[in-house]
Image (cartoon, rainbow, N blue to C red):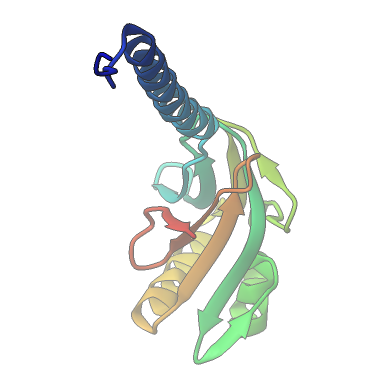
Length: 178
């Protein structure tokens, strides 16, 4: 009676097919993860708080700009000044802390309440003040006082996939929130 071989051609073909199937499964999972990451990055918002000073028009503007490729949906905003935290609009915050804001010409202001979406490439003017020399100089003094006395802000926002980021005073570069 002859000895039976363990490695028959049927077993080799079956093991090769199993190996190819497992390799295909691994590649499929890997590609799915890449596609998922690409999908998230294709709608990533990138908010930056900009300020501009127009000496010719004697006005100062503060703008929230989305330099990303997807809409930014505001989740939360917070201002901290003199060890107090405020969850109000920026113009209201200034009026609460600086009575001289009543004498300043506010040329434009917009809210950045939770749920507000800023489209890709879009801007949201938070506040524009000035228009005359007195308003311009007074608002410049207020902004300098804010910056010198520890004013801080935090704006949290998300993408349409609910990936969250936050921008803060010290960096103004979005940090992803896990």
